[in-house]
Image (cartoon, rainbow over all chains, first blue to last red; front, top):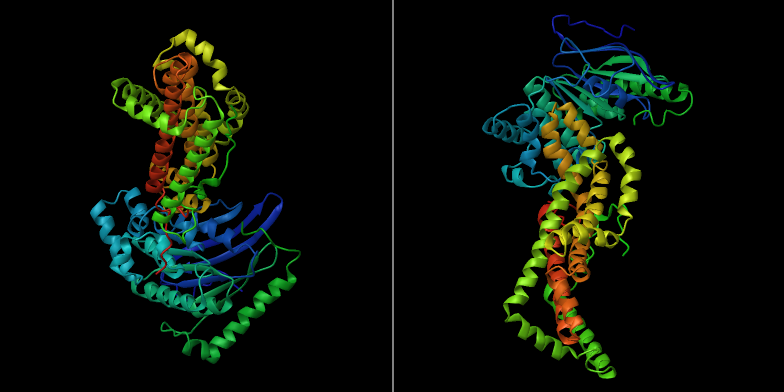
Length: 275
Length: 279
């Protein structure tokens, strides 16, 4: 396998890991990770819990320095959080400020980065509309909203930031199944309409296959890329139709095999690797 | 006087206001509480029949005396001095204690290095330094102020040190990933997140500040409600003394009510205050 497969060579690379490795003290979590995400691609990183997915995402976000190899985001070596990158965290209730209104939550990153109040307001309201939140919500507190709506606020915060790359860490793991499907479709729609590059980390194989153009399966301890699976399911996806196709089932089975292999071949428990 | 200043995370408990069972309305509770006060008054009245009237005058007599005092200027001057000293003392504790505590707590070296010193200083009973303060400032308002601050600052300072470490780690991550500058982070994320924990210290500090203000006036002979209590006692005018003791108690109630009102305003968003309204 060639991890940095680049068949459509015309599209520039948005994000690239080259021989990325990470150790917490003597414990090696990430072995040698190589992959690249092209502009406008939707890539999911899937792997069993504890494999180091969150560590990888934190490195990509610039929140953590990797101990080996290098990361390139939009052509720059990542040493700190990059301007064109927005992160959506799993735990929406903890990543939103409960003391601030929805609007203030979305505008804060903009205002703090020098965007004028009126411009920040405009962009925030636009982003909140894009994620399907009614105008009435803007002056409410996050905790007055349902979990799904709170995660929509977190997504709106990322969109208003005007990112080229959207990093998502298990963004739908804390909501119920129906909300999850709605949010998946929302992110797919936004990715198309805004030409976003999305890298999403999940332990859910169905979700990974449904959303992705390519799936990066992590395996082993320390984790390495088991394989990168293309998902040629087209741009238009539907929760029922797409998941009912033979292609979907075949890809799902393939990724499942890779991840299960990872779970059985991994030595010892990888607990705590995602701390 | 034992002053409990152990760090505690009990900002999410609102013993008085919020945790009263909601099944009964506000008015019903007010009636029940008034009834309890009247009952206690009855016990006082009964007790007063067992003692000579000069030792424990009946409530009616004390309240009548309170009414007489309330039309004198000196009564209100004493209250104004006590409340003014208390308010200034508390303001100093808040303005100094909270920023200092948060700054120390935000830095592991700061928290570790000051720990022994602060634990030592806060165990000194404030009243023990009263003679020193009297010597330096005399029986004046400044002496009372320093006494009050020297006791009330500890819970506020120590709870603020603790509060600095209680912030939501994920919000700090979020802030970093969105490249929010430090000043914005402190103003919009760090401080608001620390406030619920700081408020626990402020609540303790408020009570201590008022108690020490009255105690300082009483023991040190500086003007105020405390002095009026001591003065009445010196003249064996127990009815007048009890009238001022009642005043001190009412001041405590008012100050406490003020604290809860401020907390409700400041922590509108906090689970202890907000009413969940999922849509």
